[in-house]
Length: 182
Ligand code: GAR
Image 1 (spheres, rainbow, N blue to C red):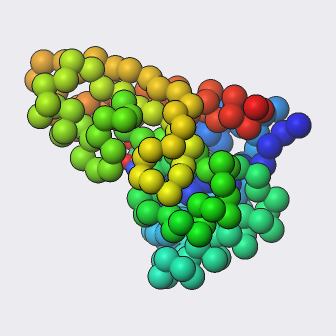
Image 2: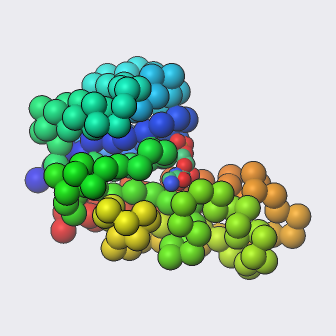
């Protein structure tokens, strides 16, 4: 069975693009939605013929609009891809066990923001990214997969972010395909 996946983004959407490009037998992208009408990823998705939705309003209204559109589109699994808003407990409960997220750190290290600066400040030898199930607790749900990259001498948060992002692009489609089939 091919799973129908909805993706939530807030900006560039490079992870969303890799998920769209890797879609096939395991999953198809049925909707891309954003809290940000100017998200570059939204225009890209629309250009691919994927239904899109932007809702910049208050969280309760936005999530109600997302929920209705996701259900109308027959979505079974939601993939967060650079969605930078906290989801409400109600929204998470309504999709229990069916929302996944990619986070730019080796969880449980560095939940939340500024992950690359924090890894550098800690003197870590490696960094990476994690795909996990979304629960009410921030960046704390079941880990589905991780990818590691070295931290190199002279790295800045930006140079490290670029290396981690490349690892994200390899990891997320693979883990999502496994997740929707389990
Ligand atoms: C990615 O690095 C993703 O891991 C991160 O935002 C970036 C989005 O880039 N997500 C988070 O920090 C979530 N807390 P993209 O829009 O190009 O995919």
